[in-house]
Image (cartoon, rainbow, N blue to C red; front, top):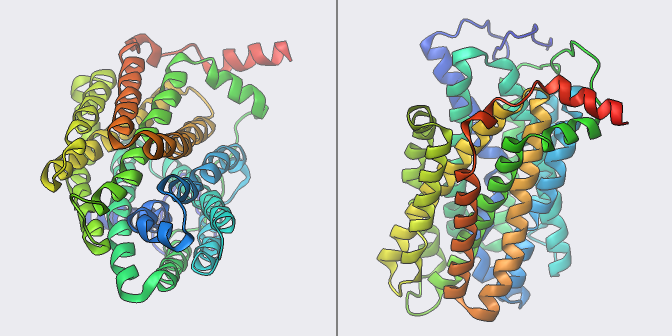
Length: 420
């Protein structure tokens, strides 16, 4: 199969005419690819109580092990972004997903928590590689007005994977056991690799028009940008909050007085369904209100959702989870957009740095909040997460509009070269 012509997006074997039906089909493929790329990320959270019993460990220990994938994702996102200019898109995504099936399959057979943790880290490395390269593919293949719907389709597939992955893991664990569950997810990884290989046209990285700056100069330039620094910090806190809520609420739901079974815990994640709609609307909200007010509004929704989570009844907990999901997914969509607006060059590296910070926040949340949950209980955990939401809101509130038009990127790079 030939590489696509520069800037000419096409499905394998088709010409790029972008009729309405063709565009809808491409967006469906993008959403499905995103779904299969991150299906393993949070699916395991629905079966954490069962895994804790199998490994005979505490909620904090199994929570930290399960979310260790965020460590691999943080490192891999940054490395892949820095190398993305040399990596083919279709082959990179397909190979990453094919290799992802190996640790996913092995998770059903590892007999100690350290090996389990290592497999989750490896999963994170491969998921982030596929994720970052797919973002690069979309950014290069869809230009102008076509970019927003393509990215919206990608985000929608990610949101759907959060919901469906948890539901599938819970139902599969009851039907075929833990080993069978991981085998099913390994098969989905392979299906994702096949889908990408046969539906995306092989695409070379965008040609460089000038000599690339060193990786250190690029990182330094992005860190010198106040808007990007703020976005990185907000991304860290968003996943810190999200991981804390949707990891440790499973233990709250499984214990008295709510006492849900494993399959019932899986069905709780229908709370993500409203987010499928609101995340798609986040861009319109930001366009109408501005990125800063919209970001503050979504963070406020997430903060409002924390209080009902302390109730000893299912209905208010479900309402709180809906609000947290809407708020964190919406804030994530807007923060990602801020990165794209604020970065005046090397946007792939900026996205990689954002994702590295985002996933590092998830790792910190799983470890720190797990210790609080075990030592001080669920109410104290909710207070810690409220503090994270308030801190993110404070950072967002200090974003002046002028920060979205920083000095020319090339000038910052030049200053770094002169220092070197």
